[in-house]
Image 1 (cartoon, helix red, strand yellow):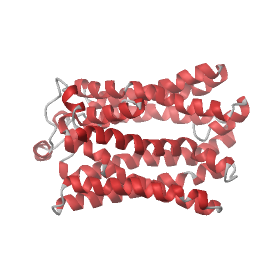
Image 2 (cartoon, helix red, strand yellow):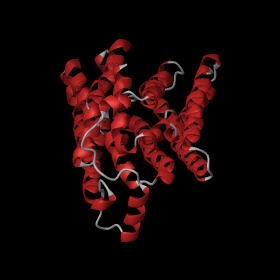
Image 3 (cartoon, helix red, strand yellow):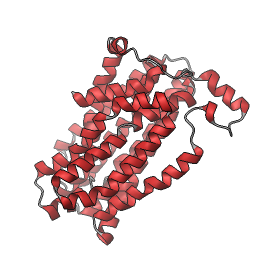
Image 4 (cartoon, helix red, strand yellow):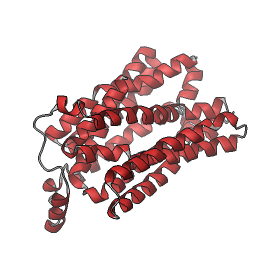
Length: 344
């Protein structure tokens, strides 16, 4: 949408206010299923919940061009529906990782998964201008929406919510994972009062607010910034928007490797999380504040890339910390902190 919104705004004569409303409507639905996603993942398993989410948001993506041509209210509803599907992704993913990944490999595993998300942004931003140029902006939504069905067919046959359910896993592998993972039994009751009474939980909520404020603004508005402020054309805006997300994919895995190495060498997990999150906050703060002093488009793109590269260290900071402080409720912790971030 961040790329397609440019020709769409021109065709439908949308004002910047309307564009902002469309961009934000996704998060209306995204907010609704954060809590439900965590509960569903514990009840039926992360595999089913994530599969449901991808199918749901893929359908909503494919329906976007039709909704846009019917009118703005229809588009807002479809974008909110897409958010409903994506809202379950993070809790379901955290649920699966808590069952599959030992503590000593947690930072690297989360970084690897999140780098897949960044590479998805890279792919979308790189191919969208070409699709728009050759087939028009609706082709972006039809193409990427249809990819969800391909993914789902593979996911259905190959993925498992926990090592216990995987028939292809060797006995020694299963024993190793189960002995080193802290999340073993499904959650039957959720101590909400106790969870929300803990200061580390509120620290995560505030961290999510600060982190996502910058990340999602850049995700949705970066191509518009390149196009309107730096005067790049549509293709250039899409291609140059790739670099920050490509940098994130690299630095997330670098940060994960550094974090796990520090933990393995005896540095406390708490200290490692704080170091990684300090880089993830102060790095973007420094580079983004430099944009107001820069006149060169090339330097502006470099600052954006460095900002997002530093931001990715958060995957070894706050995003890993859910499983550190409450391994049995890691998916619930992530969804509640992201839910309350949205409410704020």
